[in-house]
Every structure is written in structure tokens, then in C-alpha cells.
Length: 201
Ligand code: 5GP
Figure (cartoon, rainbow, N blue to C red):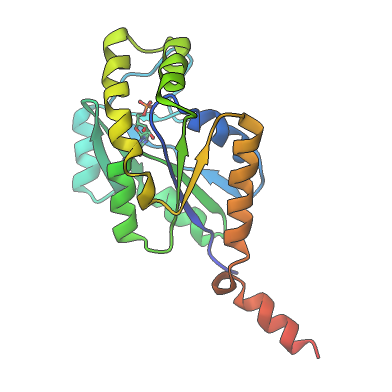
């Protein structure tokens, strides 16, 4: 059985990554990697589902034990990808999605050259501000901090394999499904299928 595809998805805070990916993970065979973070849960977030909410000490212990595939510091908190579940799911043939920021994504690029990198863009910075303000889960100060990061993050989009604009949700979801399907059909990944066709004379 072939291994699953590791997919790395980034985009500025408020671009709608979470909403788009919630649709994508409804498909079979796709595993959403639950990250660890030291930030506090937002209202409605559940430990173990949205994130593993850890203390700084516990997070640093995991780093020391080499339990993180990657980690980064973002707006004053640690965020990281626990290694073991990702390895296990890829081995089982499941595709794994990491929703992570740019610094972490670039570390994955060095460690996992076969990973597929997708950047989600908002239709405009103006719309990004509107969405963050509408979400209402962060203070005005945090919103400004996140908007301050956004332009710099978007400048890294060209380092990704694909860029998807999230203006219309269903279009963005379909675009990502198309990317996944195209990656599955890459000849390097379907060697077994090609061999089966040739053997079946
Ligand atoms: P939020 O606080 O809005 O949930 O996430 C802030 C940023 O951290 C987002 O850009 C999100 O993609 C990123 N992030 C979430 N989990 C991880 C992770 O495991 N590693 C890294 N490097 N970034 C993450």
C-alpha cells in the first residue's frame, strides 16, 4: 500500500482556512493533524479537538523529547505538530493535513520534500480585516497584531505549490479537492497502478 500524502496548508489568520478544511476533512482517508499550542482556548474550542492546549513547560518537554515534527512561535505563543499521529496515519495510507503558519511550513519543506504546500489567500486585506472583526474571538489589540502579520505571511505564498483564494467557500473547497486528486494521480504515486495495467495482458 502506498503512503498517504502530507499536505501543508497556511494562510493569514481570518482567511477561512479552518472553515475550508472542515469541509475537506469530511472526505474519507483524510486526517486533520491536531496541533499543540500554549495559547488559551477560544470560546467553543475543545482540548484534543481544536488543539492540544498545553502549558509552556509541557510544550518545551515535548520539543526536548523530539515529539514535534515542527513548531514555531506565533504572536507570543508556541504552536507545534505532534509527530507520532502524523507518521502513523501516513503509514496507513491516509492523507494528512497540517494547518500551520509559514515558519513551520518552511521547516516541513526541509524535512519532508514530498509534502504538498497550499496557501489560502483572502480576496483582499480589507476583507481579511472584516472577517477577523466579525469573528469577534480576539481583542482589538490581537486583531491588529494578526493583521500586521498578514501582509508579511502573504509575501511567502510564492514558496507554496498552490495558492487558493477563499472568496467563495465552495469554490475554495473544490479547488483543494482538485489539488488532492491531481497529487494522487501523479505518476510517481501511481507506480503500482501502472504496473498492474502492464501485467494484465
Ligand atoms: P490560531 O491561534 O488562529 O488558532 O492559529 C494561529 C496560527 O498558528 C495559524 O496561522 C495557524 O495555522 C498556526 N498553527 C496552528 N497549528 C500550528 C502548528 O502545529 N505549527 C505551526 N507552525 N503553526 C500552527
